[in-house]
Image (tube, rainbow, N blue to C red; front, side, top):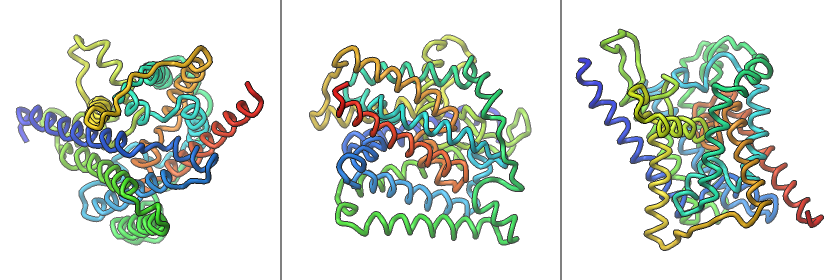
Amino acid sequence: MQESDLPGLTAAVLWATFGLALTFGAIAQRTHFCTMGAVADIVNLGDWTRMRMWVLAMAVAMIGFNLMVALGWVEAAQSIYAAPALTWLSHIVGGLVFGFGMVLASGCGSKTLVRVGGGSLKSLVVLCVMAVAAYATMRGIVAVMRVASIDKVVLALPAGQDLPSLLAWATGAPRKLLALLLGGGIGLALLAWVLARPEGRAADVLLAGLGVGAVIAGVWWVSGRLGFVPEHPATLEPTFLATNSRRMESLSFVAPTAYALDWLILYSDRGKVLTLGVVAVLGVVAGSALAALATGSFRWEGFAGTEDTANHVVGALLMGVGGVTAMGCTIGQGLSGVSTLALGSFIALAGILGGGVLGVRYQAWRVERGL
């Protein structure tokens, strides 16, 4: 490949990602796809419908990713999720903090973007605060504290932390075959659980689950296959185009909001370029806005008062800090990370769900006492 070919290929990666993110935003707006809402529905109403949406998306993304691994198109080790160093404490603490924060903020990172597209001004405030908190946790004062404390608790694994790599190391079996068997087996089991109940076969559940899961797998292909250059003409090293991590990426919505804010603020700096994460943030907002306008559901929304403002700001701060610490959000770890079968992603997912349950119960406690 010639160096002159790279700008065109980079543009293709960015436009493809934008289109997939636009689809994500439109589907999420149309179906009310929301992890925080799913947790609240279960705790408050015993309703598992929206959780089945999310689990279906997880199943589709998992099957899609591991099928690509079996075909030799991508490898889990090429992502940020499957490194041999398992920072399990960071995943737990970050997940709990993020999960609690998303309840206070009325939704996780992806839901915040969807709500911004639907006309929520308070979600715009949440988005900005979350982005600043995420940046501080990546590179600022919170980053220093994070790296000096919980990030030091590391479990060194003999192979990548994705289950196929670990089992391949332990058994000697082909990693690609194990990815196909594990990804397909777990994915099909999740799919069977979703479809076992009538609510799992509802139109919105199928649209959200199949659509969002396909988008996650699609972005993996765009980043890991379309955007992969085996030998960069300038460095002669393998390169993934247009990613902030310099690794293969799929959708995630905490760190990318910080990168998007950084790009907007320092736009005139020629060193600041569009990346997959930035265009994904813009695409979700645009897709949500188009769907809201098309269905007549676009509504301007502001804060109800001082307490409402305080809850959302605190929630945004917690999401920014927790999302970076856990290395992802409900989408970044809960779908993209889990699809790689990485141990850290399952740990972070458990933390997020636990934090979400605590947040919902905390809100119920406050209502019961009239606080």
